[in-house]
Length: 114
Length: 112
Image 1 (cartoon, rainbow over the protein chains, first blue to last red):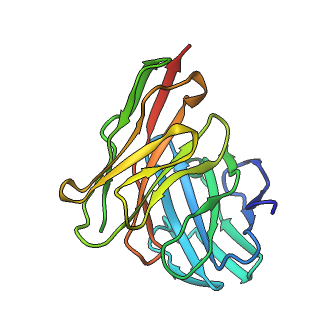
Image 2 (cartoon, rainbow over the protein chains, first blue to last red):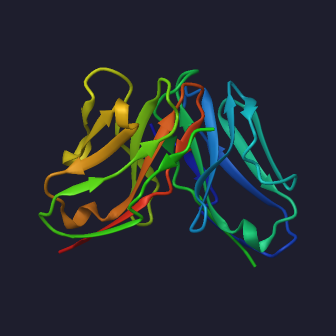
């Protein structure tokens, strides 16, 4: 298996622009997670899906952030409009099962907002 | 809400030294416990996990962790570190509803 795939790996954009991050979970996994990692705040869970349905989005920082999972093999995290403080590494992870199980992380997208 | 504490933010060791990284959590019920490692420039990878059974868990690359329920702890250990163990280590706790709580991470720097 190719593991969790994220694209792009690096994104540099200007403040105010829309940014879309993409994730393909491991085939057969039914839970998907979006995390943000910064030096100041460490690793934060933004949102997670189970069977394509958002279960908990309490970690989404504000309305500028939105996430979708239109099918079992694809998810997006969108920031509109982007701000410099959104600069971070965004990780996607997937896991198998309804309850707790090992999460497998993607390589991350390093976002820089100028 | 659950909180996970990793008290050592930055640890520097020489090769062959022994390692112990602390992890404490707040939830008093049944938990699943994990240690993840993030090598420089890479994504997080699972080192080991505890769901139930023997509280001493062995993971990859010679790492082990001990779950002590009475102390709400899940400390990571390795008897003899190598330069290649230089990485950031994250403790994570899950209460069973797919919501993971990660500690702030401990950066380990092993001097050759």
